[in-house]
Image (tube, rainbow, N blue to C red; front, side, top):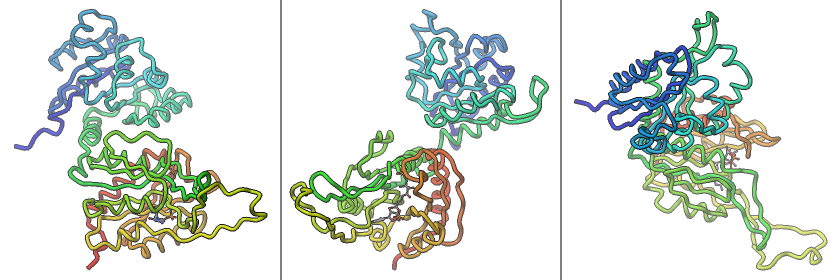
Length: 407
Ligand code: PMT
């Protein structure tokens, strides 16, 4: 018999004050049906809508409600629960709860638990549609998403207040389907993914270099998305100021030459190579041993020579991974990307417009993804979300084995 999909998951379900709180009972039941171990935390407001006893009976465990309840602190206090949970799911999540999460409040058990936990958090908002549409709530949602908190729903339809619109708690069955996707994203389980990110710096002398504006944000987001999809990830990074995504093996490099060497070491071990780095195409022919003095030259000429093309070299290997390149263009984005897809013998290419405050360094981006037999536009979104969407496409094409083979 196949295992239940959430058989190894410990889930804290947080219930907050909303008329939709009664649906949380169904949610708890359905999570258990999928094999999850569930503990329930309720806010004071939630207890006005549904009794803890109901949730205790369903979950089979006492429901935690108070931050400072001595008996609960002794057994399942917020720290213990924070450590116990593989996932925290807040459903329904009221507008007030979203605001509290944004501000890192910790004056009730649920908020303190969220603040103390390193586990992934999913929230299913439920509120009046005007409250949902309010810029304050939308701003809070954007902030939570930028912190990698998963927002599920809300749905739309007739609301308890009689209004029609967005703000209903997503139905428990659909909610569980979404949660399973999030919690069991094992499409790349057992696969090794190599990702390059950031700029390269090509030294002119000990203090100067030729570089570019890449911040590494896109590549690091791609690394995170690959980890979420179950892959074992090696991230080769140029000089950036970003923390390593949890679970990635990071190799720091500075120059295109160093990035080339790092990529080519063990390249045959990788299933997928995603070249997101903005690698210098040219480097100074000579790196001066000492700082070039201004007085020495009226005008200064630098002789540049081409760097090795990393992604093309990988594509020439007999045993080659599935290769995804990026194309950063200031004009004719699609034409140049199509040309690079073919010339560099890539399986896919993700093209983006850059310059004038787009593409490089910012938090949002859009991508036009091309492969031999198709294309897809990924519209403007936070890079973290965009990376997840890109990863979904990569997995689809990788599964379809739409890759170029060298004979
Ligand atoms: O880092 P961010 O601030 O988040 O910005 C993201 C980004 C704009 C850098 C990213 O989305 C992006 O477009 N990365 C590729 C940038 C680039 O160098 O594109 P290109 O068109 O010059 O190169 C095409 C492909 O060849 C790329 O996959 C590149 O990694 C690869 N290449 C280029 C030169 C070289 N010597 N070796 C290579 O492998």
